[in-house]
Amino acid sequence: MITKKPSCLISLFVILCAFAHYTASAQIRIVCIGNSITQGKIGLKGDSSYEFSYRPWLWEKLISTGFKVDMVGFHPYFFDEKEGNLTMKFEVNGVAFDRDSEAYYGITSIEFLNGNASAGWTSVPLPKFADRINDAEKGYTPDIALIHMGTNDRDSTAEQVAATRKNIEAIIQVLRNKNPSVAVFVAKLITGWKKINNQVNDLCKGLHTEQSPVIPVDMATGFINDPKVEGTMTYDHVHPNKKGQLFMMERWYNAILQNLHDVKHLP
Image: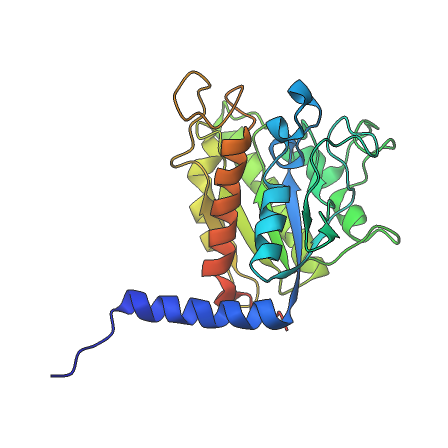
């Protein structure tokens, strides 16, 4: 009697083959887009990991599992950081954490897109996103974009939620203008009460193309926000503690791994 391999095993085999190819040959340029949850802050309680963000953990896991990764973005700083001020050091095989990102503490989606006169993030006013990504000295071209955006946006009306969605769509368009084959991962926010989460699946479906896939990533389901609850993943309902940072890292990592076949433009 001939038995068929379960489809789940076939799918796993395809993913592992794709994984082997990418780890062997490709450098993946990843931009992490967001606000404080993505940027992270240093120095709280004398432990940088207290509000660090998922970014170092994701970089570490990708590097440790064989990926060649270039984290890209307009600036390399955690919030409130002065150079050399980190108490945690991330290093894999003698390579130090690549800190570049597009994450800004307290930023809204419209400020991210259109810029802001504040000099609080980079010591000079923040240019609009299209100018940042095309900056003559700091510009970059991502292969993959990880977007966790909208936590700071107002959402008490349908119009405000629609505005956030429009801004995220415009951010994706800027990414595509720089790289028409960029793969974009859009998160449902860890602040699961934010109404933009109800729009993420439809947003991704509407923008998804074979050349430039747009993939939803559910960060909300299973995330524990209440600091008073056992297993909490935040210290203030919003910003992830180390447990929350690792939760986010795993969701991003698994999404990337499961969708390598959609990232067709990589060498």
